Image (cartoon, rainbow, N blue to C red):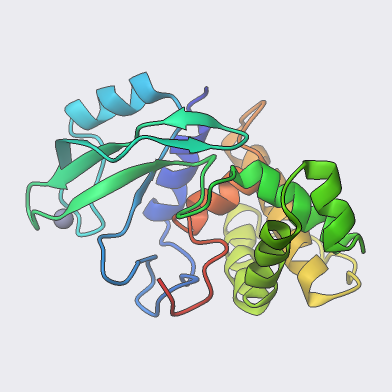
Length: 223
Ligand SMILES: [Zn+2]
């Protein structure tokens, strides 16, 4: 698709990630399984980078090709068969998750993000579900998951926003913590485009997926 998603991931790793949504160690992790490694959505480019030793393990080692994860259909994205990479140092295998996806979610992050933005504007979960063509229970689950984590989400993205643009003006106070968290994610994406000089760029929600290692909807401390 473009290289900016990889550039963006590289940026925040090089500059030190903000506090994770899911851990206290400053990096995103998932209990009981290895953390995913976020990659761009161009499968050919991901494969090239994997074979070239350009993809890093969270431990600092480099990943080598290690088969594929199971094939899955992600609504709004398509059928995916993510690559796996194995670290030459810690020997842990990682799923390479593309930024349009969230961990353990059957819908793409842009679809979920549209629901979050609508909720931030005051729309209820039933009309959101009707517009998106998703089950009401599914949409309610997204909104509850995000809503249960808004303080930490806002904090993470505000930290990143300052890294991208230290002169960012104070934003108007939105109507709720939920809306504020959504607003900060959008502002962060806009600042990333300015800082990285990317045209077209990742969507705000793909940025959110990259920054949280796919855990945007995963409550803090749960994997
Ligand atoms: Zn490693």
